[in-house]
Length: 314
Image (cartoon, rainbow, N blue to C red; front, side):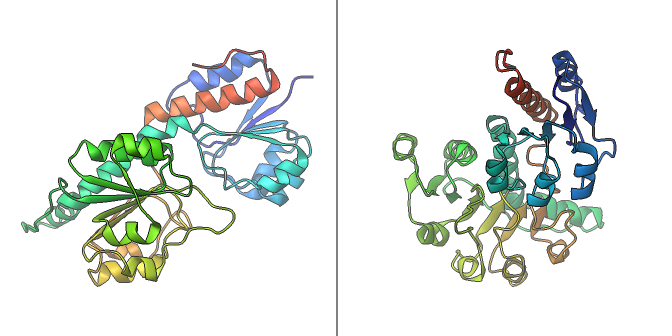
């Protein structure tokens, strides 16, 4: 009997038919998320309880959900992060987890750079003023010559570093396991965490979840940043202490911040009150090109789990 596939991703094939066509060609029976939004725990169980494979987004696969999906053998994550999945429970159950890490690198790096330019030249700030019929000007800053600190030098962090170096900045980085050869060849200075925070004019976060001792940028770290520095987070929403960031921005200790991720989404918190912050609704990987490629790779990963001899999508 062929394995049943549940496509939990709410936007699957929304930007092109290729992922759905690939799934149809596999011959596996499948069921699509009919709600057009992120699913809750009970909805995942109700729709996917008989499935052996899931093409997953950021909906929760915690212990409770996995315990109620007895036939599940593979979760193919459409994206890179897997912190929405109970890794321990999956290992206990023998459920394989696959993801698509390479395809997210370019879109996340590009959004990070866009946020840096927005804050440095106050693009969103001046747009808000003009839409309020106020012809007022506030000086920005040149990017050239600034010290850019990159927290996390994985695929995305490295890509951001390479772009920043081409824009005449000094690049510094911190990582638990830094690629020293790459850093030396790329002219990236590896420094300790505390030094990175204190020297950076621009600090951008690109760490994945740490299940041992989760990284936290709290009041101490934010107050240790340069006065007027800017902070970018396109990584994980629970990394930054929201109220400490709010206070530092309101008091102008920080010159600005840009966030694409939040502890709870949709976000409606106090940061929305400020005019020196750029907020985007978790869209770092949301380009038409990257979404199609991501869904193709996630589908291919699942097909190849059940049918190892199948060709991989290129």
